[in-house]
Image 1 (tube, rainbow, N blue to C red):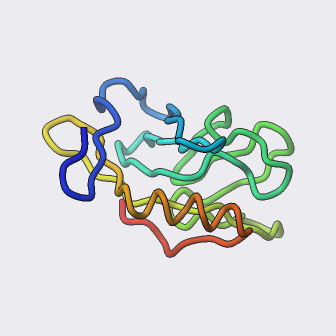
Image 2: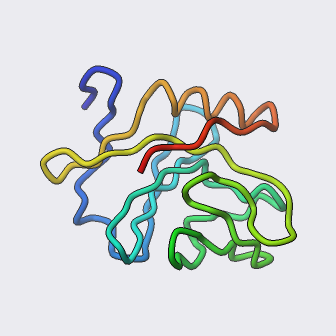
Length: 126
């Protein structure tokens, strides 16, 4: 369901703490929605900037996720690689309304376009 610019992508209870779920897009990319132990939500394009590992299969710790392929740590807040690694993955604003997860449709489209161009978007709101 779409409400204004916000796209309803499911119920909050569908994502366990320190877990993720994915959303397929019209193209070949996926969006990963992460839920931290502190019950914050973040949305990123589901590909590590290093070797395109599926971040949704990584370990969520604090406000970061570790790529399952090569252990790169990616900030869920900014999408940027942490530590000495360099690179970033586009982020998408996400919010909760009455137990439903909503992501910005326009930001999602921009993030997917930016991913195709090898660029990142501005930092997402939590």
